[in-house]
Image (tube, rainbow, N blue to C red):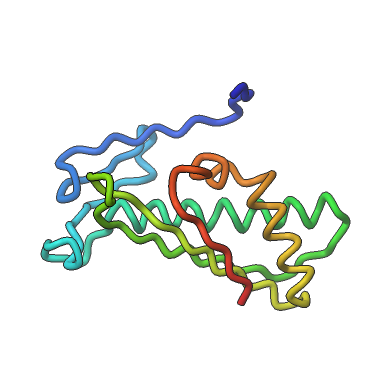
Length: 141
């Protein structure tokens, strides 16, 4: 795959799931904690699945807005919730699942579905990166 890189993010992790993530520019500096669901203490720190969910939700919502702009559709309000699950795979190791819940309150379900589908199939880089690697479902709510 050939792309022209327009922006590069650099984040360093140390200490694994019970460590810290820090971006090279210092704008991201978060403590990590192993979630209770994975046998950890949970607590007031974040985890890799929350970070991935936030990134995917923001990127996907942006992709929907991009599609709407390209089609001349005025999009006032859009919400995307990404629900990321982690667990053991039948083939060994661990895998992820993603459910994207999309709300476009100003549009009927058919238009919302069309925008979200195109965003997923053509525009969103997170969707491109995950395609064929993990299950991603999209639900219009």
